[in-house]
Image 1: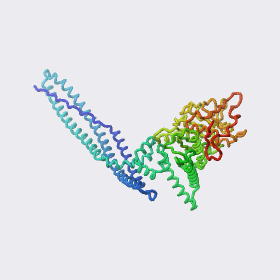
Image 2 (image 1 turned 30 degrees about the horizontal axis):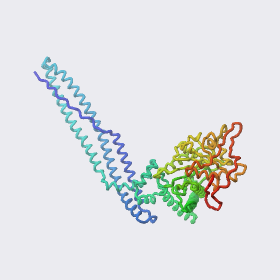
Image 3 (image 1 turned 60 degrees about the vertical axis):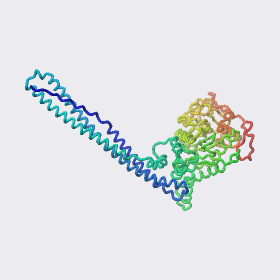
Image 4 (image 1 turned 90 degrees about the vertical axis):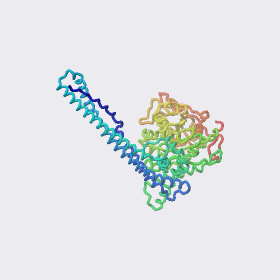
Length: 586
């Protein structure tokens, strides 16, 4: 009688960890990083030679570090490609391992099923005949051999998996750089951070700048002025330095072409814009604070003379945008282009004076911001539609976010939108959370998407409106039952809108509507400029209010300011002062 010895089952190894698809994605990502390092190395090689444009200790520091960084990035690219290859090979191997494990699993399940049948047969072997018992012994012997083969296959499988993982670990370990090696990559990585095509927040730029040494900051300004000059979140002083480099470069190169007679029509427009920026900046550099006699200095915060098909983008300021207690940003309206910058620089200076006079001694910075594409003219489809105001509102909100992020402290910030610029400002404050403390709308053709001042991010109590009763542009806003076809929204000076209206009449207004009355809100000795100064200074109690316009429903809207006698004699200043008056006693 034969004895049936049922073999012990072989325990199946656990399924290997790891998703081959994820590993392949890692390999692709590493390849992308290698591409970026190679690009950075090429850029570093190009930027290591600035010619004769920069000399001194900062340049030597910059040149040494960026030359080293070029070599380090080239080496890093090679290492990253090696690691990417190792990860890709591991992914392919792991996909094979998983297929092998699945086969082992199926074999194990099949053998276990045979073993279960054998156990059932062995339990009744005593009653079975001799032939049946011999068959059970043969089946047990065959199963034992199969289990031994499974164990051998699993041992070989485990060895393959281990070797594959060890190969990957070795590749990763070989790719590890020590701190000194990675330090060479750090500087260029930071310098080129602004050039990364993915969106970079103003807060990220501010943090990047804060971590640079003075020499590195100077290097970034000299090597990458286009990026620093337009870098929302960077200090105004850095942007100014970078933009002055760009301005002088344009003036030098294009003036030479003009002398040689090789200037193209497009280049002629760029040169005209550059000269306008230079004139505006010169005006503000020469401006004298009326209280201290000091020159607070001008700032070229934005310089892009080729933008918007040659209309240009520009922002110039007087006062220190990085430290001033009170900051004003003026947003212009239709037909304003970069070559208008000198005139708007005068308006910025006038507003600076107004905020300083009669104030509490707080420091002031006043900026003219032309960062959006204004409509081309009064008779223009863009003037009576919202498209450019919507786009401008996005750009304005981003600019203010950048200005906020660039400062360590929180300035008292006022945005003033004039004409179509008031509609642009309304979009920024309604749809994009404009990060201002106050908003003032002057000469407004409509408040865009806002139905009431409560819709503004600053809150209704911080929305101010100035409207000259002879300004025809203000008639474009909707009021009461009347709605302008294709209009720009509700008249913000109306009672229904709910903003604080301030006096803004002109002494020379006459009795008819004239477009000349649309452009004098920043004039010396005007009601409007006085009140704007008080708003910028953060002194709402000194703002001289005016009655709202209203709609009596049986006739067209009525403006109570139309019959009021304007204030023409402002105490505290004579016409020879050369600056804005003190407005004592108002």
